[in-house]
Every structure is written in structure tokens, then in C-alpha cells.
Length: 166
Image (cartoon, rainbow, N blue to C red):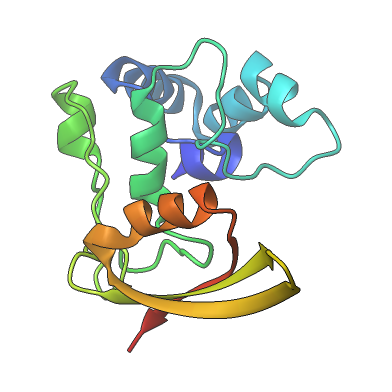
């Protein structure tokens, strides 16, 4: 949690955790917390006037790519809190394994759109003998959505909206 709240990211590996555990054992809690706040990483990322924030989704010089996935495992959205969470990264970090991004429980629409239908509203100008403009609506399966959008653009149509059909 110290990595999350003080550096805005997940730990990179077991070595990094072990260093902080040794500081805690040998010098105490205050020294361990100060080791984050007084670090070069903290200074470069936040300086003296910025409150630490989640930054695992930003490219960071000298950081392993696995930090991106591990930060998502820690954060799980804008309103995430630490109450009732288990230590999800212990086995991944201890075994030096990659961390999978897992869809949060109760999330809807993010993991499988394949059975859904979408309504596309299109405005198309017709520059024939009479200048007219019309609107057309298409309803397509998710699997056809990309191809339909490409066809609309090829024929000069302008997409006004794309909405999910209930």
C-alpha cells in the first residue's frame, strides 16, 4: 500500500519490497516512510508541491512494463479504496510472474460486446441535381460495427451517433 499511496504505482518486484522491509526492520516505520518521500523517484514525479497520485498508466523511465498491469490490480477504478482488499500481487511479485488485468466483479459491457447490437445515425450530403441532406439509421451486430463505420466513411457519410440498442 505504501507504493500505491506514496509513489502512485505498484511494486516492481520482490527485491524492491525486500529493500523496504529491511529499512522497516532495521530503522523503523518512520525511516521506511521517509525512504519513499525522500527518494529520487518521488522528487521527480511529485516534487514538493504535488500530492502523490496514481501514475501507473503513464510511461515511466526505468520502470518495467509489468508495473502497468500491477497498478491496475491495485487501483481498480476511480473510486477504489483499500477496505476489504486482499493482497493480490504477493504471488505474482514473489514469483516474478506477469500480472493479468482482470475485469472487476460486477462490471458490465466491458468484457464482451459480441452479442450486442448498435444503432448508427448517419448524415449524408447528396450533391446531385438538388443539394439535399438526409439522415439514415443502421442497426448492426458488434461484429459488423467496424466494417459498417468504414463503409460510411468511404461513401462520405458523417456519423452523428453510435449507441447500444437495449
